[in-house]
Image (tube, rainbow, N blue to C red; front, top):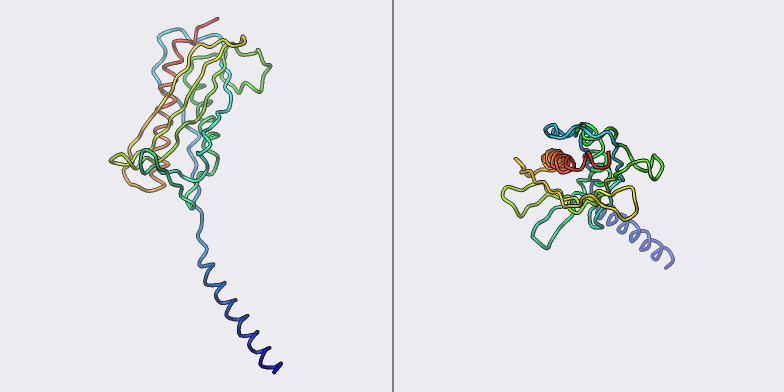
Length: 208
């Protein structure tokens, strides 16, 4: 009797082990994507003389639903995430760094740097932002990379503001693939920085 019970338990253990192996299935690799660091602004030279003042930039905040998993918009009110195609960094970090390098290259200000690296009142103006949209939009034909950033140009004095606005950019995909989405995102971000540089050119000589 004891031998029969032991044999039954052993057989049951083998069955459960086999089921466990089957349920795990093959391991699926994650694919990570980065934006190029050479996202410099190529906006035309400002009509005003480049400012003698500096511009501080604070790292952007982000909407809570934006994360490192690639985000697809499939209807005006519905989104989905790709668990296997992900950005190598949080999107707001990539966008903030691209804005810093792009606005430096635009040549509107004597210095563009992270505001947190200097004393509080070092920069007469500080640009802050929030990443509102960062997605592959499949509601358009063809699908497109879409970015939206709300920006605010603050003065050094408390509660002073020079400008605020929502900047957006959209670039169509030639193929609906994660790699092409990453390339289209680079193009959209470059255009977003160029358009922001044009907006800031009207304020570059404030409080010289």
